[in-house]
Image (cartoon, rainbow over all chains, first blue to last red; front, side, top):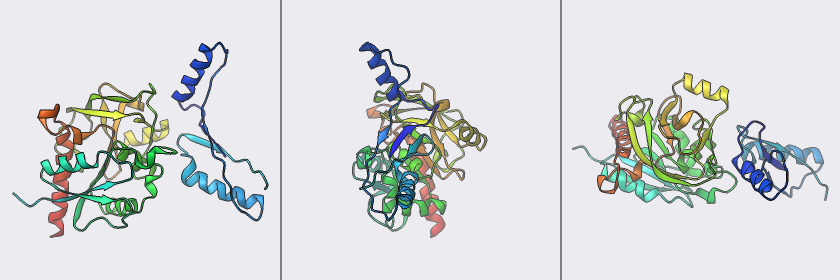
Length: 76
Length: 231
């Protein structure tokens, strides 16, 4: 799953990355820094796995005030 | 003099201001008790709670995000719901926000730098349990030391909190970029307060400013009142 700062939320880490990249000569636009969490879950079907990971995001992995999240599933 | 009210200081793995808090509370007339994060109940006869500063659980994921699942936090939640005074300092503030006991969230400082210096905060409310020794508009000089002290709430939430008078302290010289210079907020009932500055580091004039005593002595008073109500 991918957690990222919500649109409109100031992201000082992203700003620091952005200015470093510019200093290196890369003409980048805005940079935003999020977080990837790789999880192994056992589930009978993809829908159940997704529902479970959504619960994890709501309860711990993302703070809804400042972060949004996306879930991507890969079958074993 | 009445006997000393018991105030629990909850110790998490990675707390590092627990002993300073206990020392300051003792200096101000309380009997501090260190309480372990894994305990499901607060120590007996506890009439006040401090969540101290530090880096609970290594600040992994987000500051305070993991500590809120500690068994002791459930006990703190019950204590707060019962009207008991709870003070969260720095990491303790972050934990209270993540636990939903206080509104908003603490984010990395706007400067991305760790700040460690005395700051001036203005008392916006002197009528909460934890600021009763202060006067409205009073300036307190208290040190901060944090990398993630930038309090944030979306506009609608901030407007609601301001309307309900839950902003208790504001920086005169904002060290971290918090929205509307917020340094400390309380819950709706006014018995739970979180702040980024460290009052426990500012109680003895020998070591610099002693304005932290206004906050901590308010807590000691509140604990003493609560204890009397029990007898």
